[in-house]
Length: 270
Length: 278
Image 1 (cartoon, rainbow over the protein chains, first blue to last red):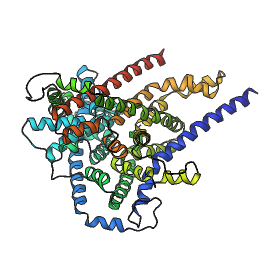
Image 2: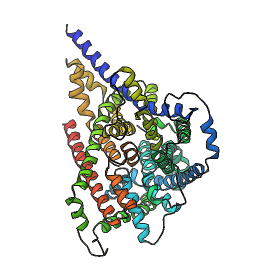
Image 3: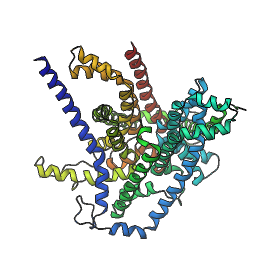
Image 4: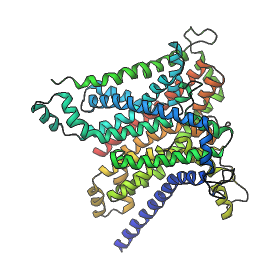
């Protein structure tokens, strides 16, 4: 009698949680699939399911020069942002990962706070600041603004990787006569490389996708892709937007598979 | 031979001081300036904010929006983390991959797909009409309900990951012991698993809440021009009205409001950790 009650309990819990999780997974994945399918539509309207399939809107992208320029700007900004975030973020991670000092905790809090503070407020603050200094928005300032909001990702994954690193390995290297740089290059970097790599990937995606900071720091001539798309969607829903979106989803999927293979992305995110 | 590793934080710290702390200080300074001449130190802008019902109703609806979306994320996110934590490593990778897929996809693209789904002739309305649940298409776009739904989807991964981290570190023997002592599955869930995972739940709530209130793209594209939340309010004052001092004031108030909620949740996290170790 008791065991039947227990069976029913176990079953009901599994059913309720299973159903909620299943709904949530569909909820998470469906939009990406719908974007991909819609982008292959053959008609002028964004109906789902599409009435016919074709590649015409992808072909139309070849003539969308404004969009191409925006995409190129975004890639450029994301590249420099990632590079600077990785160099500065890895350094910061090494400095604070194993320290229990107050300054290290304070730095950790400071470096992580862009993830919690409203990015739009920071973007506006940065605009006010560079105006006060007598500058105009430009690509270098845009990159610096992106580094502030993207470096935390590199820092987080690098610190996680460093906390897995056995300090005895470093001591062994030093006692065998290696200097700091050799130890870093031959021991530390290979062991934390996957963590840094995953962080770099996250930083790149975050920069490529950033709207709130770019809204204020991009000058009138350099339009970035997410803002271009945002304006397209707000004003006229062009089917080419669907094609770019499809392209972005597919590229993201491919990059994620690559990041999973080389950096163990899903393990780094936990 | 071994230089001080702490010096390696200097470049990043310098950048943060010069390009994060300094701008925020300038912002606070600007918010304290008087209206016609920008020199006098005054609380004029703050008085203006809090004496106009319009302003603080926006602040309030933004905070509420964050709370609602966070609760939806919790209801759907906890079961995913729970199931993921007890799956085989292979399935865990698959589930985490599916969970982080949306957070890595561009927010603009994700929001765009929701316009296709929620529109009057969208997938959801077609299904509702086909099932006979309504006689005419529902208005889902440009409603708060729509914004909450889309925010929940966009930010769900931020809820799942911290809970998963805590749940997969929890000793499974504790739940087994509870069951061996005669507690049912539900009782074990409420009395053992959930309390032990509270630090993860709160960490998830902090990240989700902070992301939801500031999600400018989703709020403007799904909410439209009539549903105004704090980020759009800042943007309109800064770029549309070109009123920088007032935009600075709204920004400061918004940041303080977000940090207050984060601080309260952090206190709760500390209490809950003490509770689980007792």
